[in-house]
Length: 118
Image 1 (cartoon, rainbow, N blue to C red):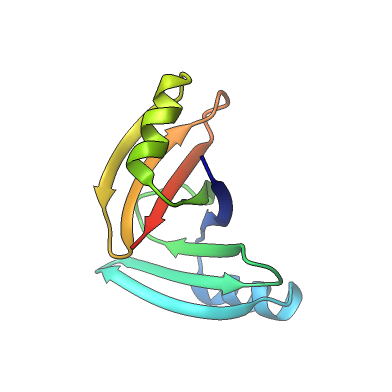
Image 2: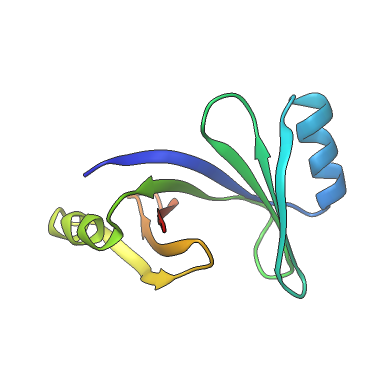
């Protein structure tokens, strides 16, 4: 099983203010913007290395850290192995715009997104 941290997702109250903070204060660059459906804005911020910060503005989720995203090569095999080790899968695998996605929780209730990019 080959899992690597890809991003941290943060739900924000003000996208422009958050972008300004991560670019001007933290030194990140805007990688891309998405508007997958009305009322949801996503901005990917790139710093040094491979991991990114995903900022999401919506009216559904509480503000703060939402999840940690991790890349996997074979999502179905990874989910099967994690279940065999006692992991609690809370969603998926389901198709997404970039491949497929599943969520699990660690013992503290932290959401971990597993993503297979196709």
